[in-house]
Length: 113
Image 1: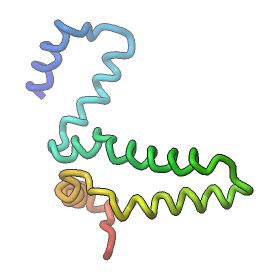
Image 2: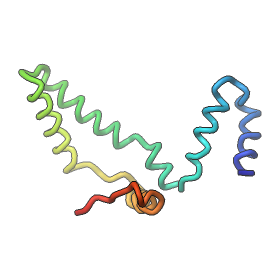
Image 3: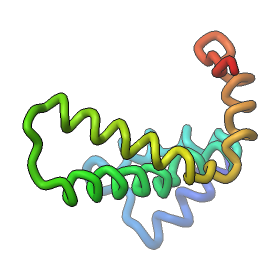
């Protein structure tokens, strides 16, 4: 907790922490630092999500219109399926999954292969 206070004091000079809402937001950010660097990286990295969104947008954009909602769902499914074949895993994911399994053993169920 001492490190957090020191960090807060250091940030207080650059960012005034007495602004409304900032102190509350700070209380919500601090627990994030309790996680290991691997877990933090997996949590804040959105590259995989952005890549998947790009694949879906591209599939929808090239098609234009759909005869039914079911057709749109099928196209999205096929786009994701095609992406899974070429997608790379998130760096540090396996380490993070193992740490999640230890930290949240009562709530975390690993995928059985």
